Picture 1: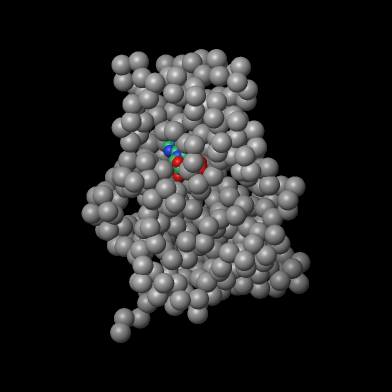
Picture 2: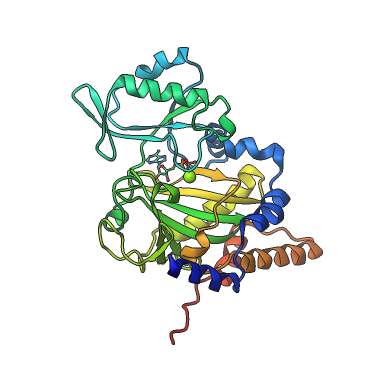
Length: 328
Ligand SMILES: Nc1ncnc2c1ncn2[C@@H]1O[C@H](COP(=O)(O)OP(=O)(O)O)[C@@H](O)[C@H]1O
Ligand SMILES: [Mg+2]
């Protein structure tokens, strides 16, 4: 714990963004309320992404009412793996990742056996709003289960790692790879117990990690080093994230992406209030970078110029590459 606070204090001097500043100067300023449903509802996000030609995990079906729970069998069909999640969920809550069938039941990615009745009951809980923001009635979506690219085998435990990039007005500002652990039950959300690993924006090379508020260099389950891993398709991920600005119109977002073994890079979801722990994993504060983007936007506006996705990515990669700390 002590190490964590020391790091946080050191980061403060380097422009760390706290929750109040994030809300006042970024979320409220750049995210129009009327656009929230696009990111707060994963079904709407998916529709938008598909319309924009951006790849997402295939939607098998949606259940909106208790009566429609009867459709579950039909939606699942002969599939042996799939994912059920609340359309308006957050933080990995309410997501069940089914990896296989077992004697008339299902096996989750972390090995738990569950019955069809239990799945129906879970869907019913989703509908009542148990996992939704503000407890509102929700819809359940059933989608393709992502199989992570082989590259993640040595540094992740069950489930799918995801890549989170924070994007301000279409400019990527910071990135993190999130690795599921035994504790996180196949989900890559930090508060479920996943690891956050910083990523060099310029190169896609991983930096060190943060786990349960500690700084780490090895995966607790696989004991392999989490730093120095080259993420494939890095420029592609950067462009995908930057392009999400045009997709949703929100100026300050966290873009969650995965690398599927067969389908390649996919967008999982967008977040209008992205977490701040990404700064610990990157050993760097967000505000220096967000200020740089804001200064850039001002300068471009004065010249009447709007940059393309490629130009925005190039700007971010040139300015926000990782500078190794000076040893001493
Ligand atoms: N289709 C999927 N296939 C496999 N794992 C998934 C899938 N969807 C989500 N997950 C796992 O659950 C985590 C959280 O999913 P996400 O869609 O981002 O919802 P949330 O809003 O709860 O964070 C992901 O980071 C991933 O590890
Ligand atoms: Mg997420």
